[in-house]
Length: 70
Image (cartoon, rainbow, N blue to C red; front, side):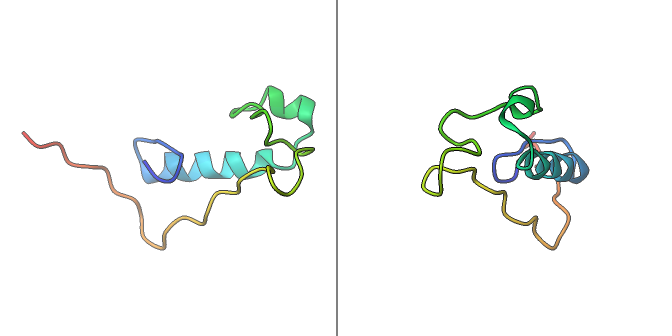
């Protein structure tokens, strides 16, 4: 897990972040059917105060899975 993304690997989390950022450029109609859907009150027309929250950059190191305690 990193920021608001969950994945089994670093690559899955990286892809989720890329998908989130790419969705910022979609129209409202396209965003509704995209991977993350349209979050009411945070779409392109919500204004600066309630606009879309961009994902921060990934850390400079690869994410590693948690180890389960046995």
